[in-house]
Image (tube, rainbow, N blue to C red; front, top):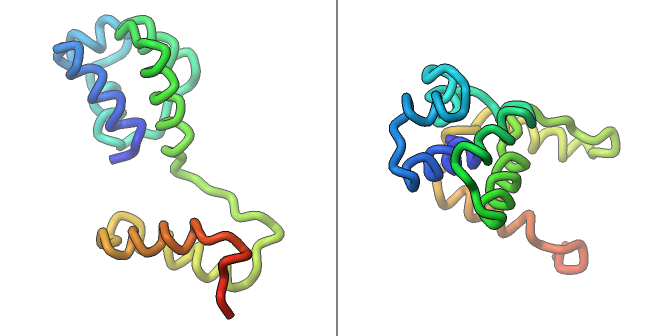
Amino acid sequence: MSPFAQKLKEYRELRKLRQNEASIAIGCEQSYLSALENGCKGPPKEDFIKRVIRAYQLTDSEIDELRHAIENSRKRFVLSSKASIDEYEIWNKLEDQAGRLQPRQIALLKIALELGQDNIIY
């Protein structure tokens, strides 16, 4: 489940709406809302996001959280042309294992990615 899918479902449930009620308020098919909430579809266009914001009457804080979740829910990535061969290899291994990484692997990857250039030990 993507961060966007999780937030979308969370905000609907906080408002005690069923999917069919929410889809009517947003102006979309229930099947589309279901696909979004289950992470089967990536984040929608801005027009849909604005309709969600209005239908759910999101607070400024919730809007910020939703936008952050959208940014972190991309399904397609572009590797920089400046990437090294090693970065290509890592990128492809991550892509192959996406959805199957264990919590410890994820925790270690986060730690490694947070290391600044000055903290790398050779």
